[in-house]
Length: 148
Length: 148
Length: 148
Length: 148
Image 1 (cartoon, rainbow over the protein chains, first blue to last red):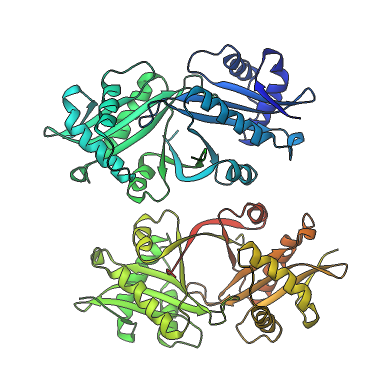
Image 2 (cartoon, rainbow over the protein chains, first blue to last red):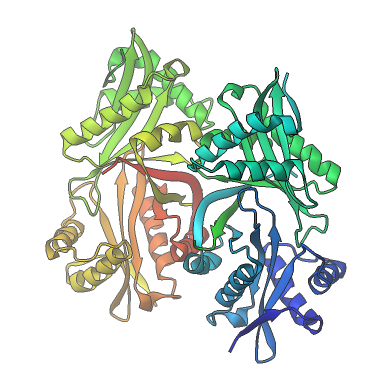
């Protein structure tokens, strides 16, 4: 059985392995250790308004992670929940880990009183979108960035 | 000349006319007056972490508005700037008002030390995208929502 | 008034000016004269199964062109009509020339007994799509090419 | 080993099973037998300019099909090849059948002297696009239809 729970201090190694996989997916290899140290510290020593981290665990092994944050929204006074990072390991495939993580964020958003949850994904993230089409609703919104 | 500046208490009527236009664009007519009262109050009596509002003014008339917020980001410790709302009136067309508003948000993000700015727009918002392609960079990211 | 009619031998100069504009839009400047000679000859001396050409004329001036072809279709024994090229001059703007050309292709397809008409356009052809959304239906189909 | 070859009269039953699967994918169940009879006859008793059919066979079993046609093109006097239908059975998965079929069309297009090949697919055909991104090039072209 897969359990989804808040990330804990003793998860550091397993969490980092997953988060490295996530950044490899976005072609960001070779991030320094300090990057992971600081990111993990934010999740553990959580300041008001900062990110929450969840991990999926089965048989003592971490199979996936998600990081989400609540931020203000002009039309929704209660704010919204932005699910920024989601990753599952190869071993997790077909075990419902991605879905369990997203649904845990939904539950956390309900508990926070800000049930509106959204995330962004690359149009060509086919494997991800196979899941997202089942647990979410595609919108016609696309993202623009300030030029680098 | 068009001036972009922070929204002020005396802008209420002109700001509301623009923000009604914005919501009409997204097919949300008939929003109650309380909606506009609360939104405006948030912009004026700004709490830490909440939205900033800018307006574009020429000859004593408000021609456009934008609302943006800074929120945490997992990979960028300094956070990012989300430009949520942007609207210009019909009279503003061709006067560079939309560009001036976006560039004012860029400047505000620089001043905040969180220079990364992004926004979302519907794929079929052709008029908007004509501008966004000039001042921003389209990304392959699309938005998914939690089902209503 | 704008008249849409089959291209004629005496249209060569006006047609070429438009077709050059079309290819400039797709960033193909400097096509050789032989290209235009051969393309025009195909439209005039039309072989069975080859392209049809229409032009839009007002006050003795050509304001737009379209080229279309019928080709077999596996699920529609009567075949389908592919509207490949469409272009209107700057002077034509706001006069309904694009719409008139597309509707003339619809009529030609009806006359041919192959009423199904389609065309392809770049996702970011905003000006074109403003028209296409009114006279056509966007589909979720995207085009893949054999690599060059 | 998978062999790709032209469809033959004796393939009727196996071909129809595959083509029914293809139409189910596009949510067209219950096509009449006459539809399949006529489509198959076109592939066998091929008239000039009409569709070609290929099947992929292994161990006496048909695992996939493709139908393609050459049609005129305004900018390419030699014409282009439109790969309209492509389907592989569940048993074919992971055996390179889809790729083999597409590459056989490439070879046929070369032999015809019209090497430009294209196809259309739904933006959300994730499984198909995983293959298409490897054997083809995504373009920014989207399809519009005449309204039904």
